[in-house]
Length: 113
Length: 110
Image 1 (cartoon, each protein chain N blue to C red):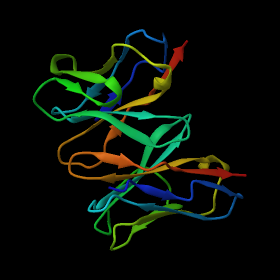
Image 2: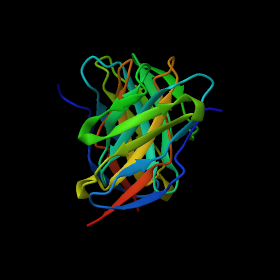
Image 3: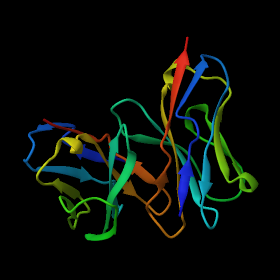
Image 4: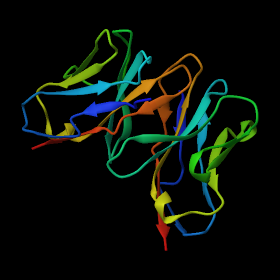
């Protein structure tokens, strides 16, 4: 079955530190991959997406993600975290023939001053 | 370009009542999907409508239903509300490449 796994439920970092959120997928073929961010009580905002091509993808708010086919991973990174980055982050994947993404359970990012 | 609009933002209902939530997608998008988000279950897919037809359905009881109008606006209805239906309901408007989400409707069942 198709699935997306985010191994970390919570991640705590200090402001200014680097960040990496993990995401692994299980699909028959390489899916389309996405990272979303959700602030409390809000909807999901798309940070970045990967369809094909360059495996390092740049997104909004200074985020980037790297697709690694050999590891079935699509990890999200940011070199220096700001307090405003505290939120829930969701990795998602969908196959090319579907409009329905499968979401991971989410990783809650806590930023210490 | 206007985003996805969900109304109302907040709703409080009593057990046994029914509720209707509305979603206006991005202009030109024909696919509208609904998700239920709870702390314990995460994001769960309810159903997807495309050009007024339900194209995909998640694993929810028949109390959850939806429809889509010719202008792509969508509604979802929950009948005979239960306490466990309390959740954030998110609507997504999709193009061929990505899904855009509304702010959600926070439903509280008391």
